[in-house]
Length: 113
Ligand code: 2BA
Image (cartoon, rainbow, N blue to C red; front, side, top):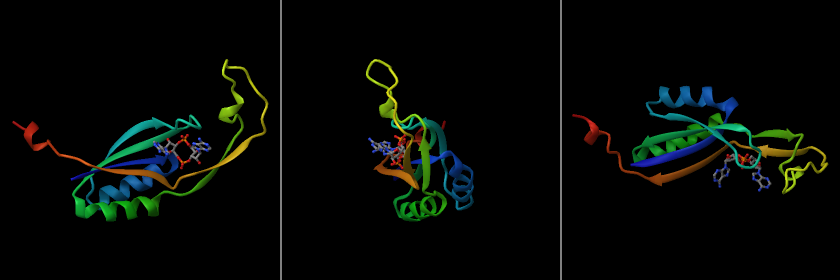
């Protein structure tokens, strides 16, 4: 069993989730926030059999777009003491998705009575 952590952009959540569910995957959606841009994103937890991992990664890739985000207040424009340091807006390319796959044990059955 593997557990996929997929950090994706808000705009990709609907499409990706419905595609995954259509294809028989189970997923849990967690609200998350990027450490760097402090923008909201979504983390999906997807528990899958090892042989289904590759297909899940393909679906994630197909449904998560790369986007350019213009940050008007770049993270480095806030000084160590909270003071504002003027900087021009900075562009960041975000996505498609940040994905981690780890080994997991599914104890769900043991939790049933
Ligand atoms: P954030 O941490 O808010 O990062 C958003 C985007 O800002 C990143 O896009 C990247 O283009 C840029 N960025 C991040 N850290 C940077 C830095 N130190 N210097 C310059 N630019 C930087 P993505 O790489 O596509 O990441 C999207 C989101 O995925 C991240 O949002 C974070 O929530 C998550 N993420 C990315 N790498 C991760 C990692 N190694 N571990 C945990 N979460 C990660």
